[in-house]
Each structure stands twice: as C-alpha cells, then as structure tokens.
Image 1: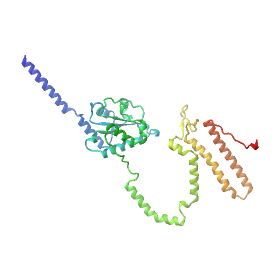
Image 2 (image 1 turned 180 degrees about the vertical axis):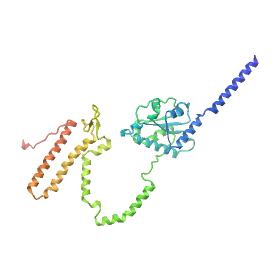
Image 3 (image 1 turned 30 degrees about the vertical axis):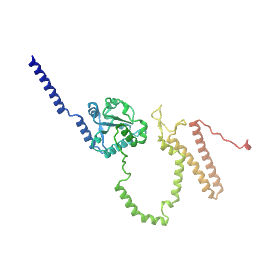
Image 4 (image 1 turned 60 degrees about the vertical axis):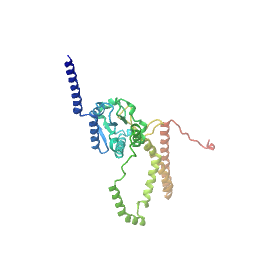
Length: 346
C-alpha cells in the first residue's frame, strides 16, 4: 500500500512537470512573444502606429492575461466618417502618428516596449468597438497592463483635450504611463529639396524682377490689381467670411423634413450659414460699388441727362439691396428696423 502511494505521488509529480514544460514550450503567445510581435509590427509602420483588427485585439489584450508587460494606446477610427470635417478624424490621426513617432525617437531600451500606439478601424473591428463600448468618435483610450475589462473607461482621453492635438495626447500619455514622450517633432513645412528649388528660382528671377520694378511694369504697379483686392477685402469683411472660417460653418444644411431640399438661410439668431453671409455680402458690395461708381466715375460724365438716369438707377438698386438686407435681418432675428425722421418733418 505504501509503494502504491509513492508511485502515485511520483506519477503526479511527473505529470505536473510535463504539463509545465509543455506549456512553456508550446505557448506561442507568451508575454515576451507578444511583446516581440508588437515591436515587429511597429517597426513595419512608418510612424510606429500598429493597425489592429478584432483578431489583434483578442490576441494582444483579451487572451493575454493581466498583468501584461505592455500598455496599448488605441485610436478608434471610422473611414466612413472622414467626410464629417467637424470630427477632424484624419487630422487627429495624423497628430496621433506624430506622438507615436516622437515617442519612438525619444525612447530606447526597455521603455520602448512598455507602450505601443495602435489604431482600429470600425469596418474591420466592429466587435472590438462593442467590447470597448465606443459609440462616438473621436475616441482615444489607454489600455494598461493591469486593465482586465476592455469596457473600463478610466483610460479614456477626455474630449476637451483634443483641442491641443498632439501636445494634449503626449501629456495624457505621460500622466497615465509615467513614460516620457518628449517635445512633439513635427515635420518641416518644406523639405530640403523644395527649399533648394525655391532658392534657385529666386536667384534666377531676381535680376528680371529688379528690371521690371525699375520700369514700373510689375503687378504692384497695376491699379486694377489694387482695385480688385480692395473689392475682395470689402466683400470678405461684410460677408462674415472670417466668422465662417473660425466657426467652420457649412454653406448650407439638409432640410430635416425633406432630405431632398437644402436650407441656405437658417431662421434664428444663434447660427449663420455660409450662404447667408455671401448673400448679404453681395448686396452690400453692390451698394458699395454703385456708390464708388457714382462718386468717382459718374461725376466725370458731361451729359446731365445720363448722370440723372444713372443716378436714378443707382438709387433704385441700392434701395432694393438695403431693403433686402433689412428684410433678411428681421426674418432671421425678429428685430425690426424703423426709420427716424427729423422732428421738423413731422
């Protein structure tokens, strides 16, 4: 009976050792293997951002037990939403790549493999979006080595931090991971080859430009250029173009009641479409051009009847334009504009 117990204990010991050995030699997804595979995928990317799909998320995050020796910063993307400029997905993706490239440039050794920058695209990773509980973009989330549930939103980057683009992303990474990203390394606006070509063109063109300047034959000496520029700046100012650029206002909207119709004028003082500004700016420009024509050109006409006729037409058109502006302002804001006559006229 004693021999049987010893034999049984020996068999259990051998079985345990064989299972441990087989697990250590047959498990291809060990921590070191996963880290090396991520590093290999990163080396194949220009900016160091790894493209993952549902299989990659399962392999590197779900199947890998915690604590993992690495953290993953995920950028959630959707190609079908790139046309919505207000989301700025393409711009944020470029900034995300800059942060990744800067991290690679400023780190080496063991710290380099503690954090990997990855992205997943909705059309190829819908189940992963559901696992993370992501239902709105833009979205960036840090999955640390101790994160067990992918639905944990503690690693989500706040929406307000996207305003400063790559700098905010770098601060987020440094605060959460205690790793150093460093100053963002943005590519130069012009490459060395482009700068060389521009310098060569300037050197070649300089003698010809000086010759034309001395003769007064440049565009800067053409009064028509200055006239066109003044009209453009006037229209740019009165059309609210700067407001449209800063607020990124659309030219028109789709009618909610009838998708086949477009709305060019929005009734309400809280919003102004681009088409509204251009329409009002056009009316203002017409009045301004007529005033300039009457005061600078018409006064040189010697025929008194022609002067009177043109002046009458200018007054009628200007009155109509001003009336349209007042009508649009009243329709949009509800405020009325009333004339005030001199007391002696009453």
